[in-house]
Amino acid sequence: MGDILRMEPGSNLVEAAARLPAERDLVGDHPTIVKLRALVGRVAATDATVLITGESGSGKEIVAHAIHAQSVRARRNFVPVNCAAIPHELLESEMFGHERGAFTGAAAPRHGLFATADGGTIFLDEIGEVPLQLQAKLLRVLEDGIVRPVGADRSVKIDARVIAASNNDLVAAVKRNAFREDLFYRLQVVPIFIPPLRERRSDIPILIEHFLDRMRQRLPGRDWTVTREAMVNLWSYDWPGNVRELVNMVGASSSCVRTRLSTSQYCRPI
Image 1 (cartoon, rainbow, N blue to C red):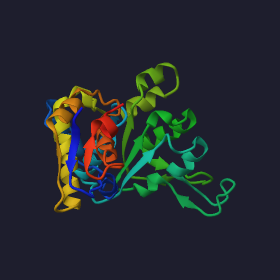
Image 2 (cartoon, rainbow, N blue to C red):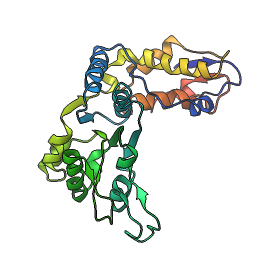
Image 3 (cartoon, rainbow, N blue to C red):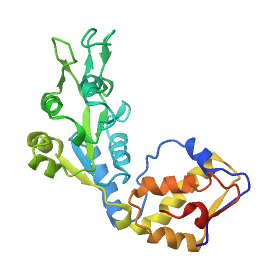
């Protein structure tokens, strides 16, 4: 396999990538992405709840942020929440807040993430990981716009648009009673599916060039190019980690090499 990138001596893609802002653009010319961008524009003009599905790394948070950025809520907070990363016993207080003394360690009252998103958008990623008991409380938020902090005796009115996402099959979760059916339908007012990268391979060169162009903006005077042979290899790979894997691969390719990067050493997807 040939070289994947030709780089100037001393350039370090990983170091530069770490300083890049989070990706916010829906990049690609494949028909599915063109249709997705149009759908995002239409959905952003409403205040409907959205459920985004797709494989891990396909860009669900990018789509959620694009909806927020094009909506009337764009000037207010966009609050991403990884439901799978928060321990179940803390998830309710993280989402809804708590009063002082509500539980051991609650030395002071705290606003929850829904309160932080008031007037803006809250993005509930990995919504399928929310425990059943909390799903019932989340359903009330969606229906009435009301949250009750842990330990509080009064509810609080919240105005936050909810966008949820999952890379799991929520329909199957409903059938095995692991996810509430009423919550599923309340979330899926507008369903959005993001296709995996392997189903839109023509976007691979566009995505790589987009990422490298962002690097050039951060490091003026430096340049990177992709060889023809490397592009063939990248095109033929299935990318189980989707766009996230593609970006990470490009970044990791320079972590150990300062000049000429070889696919046989570092860059070949495993």
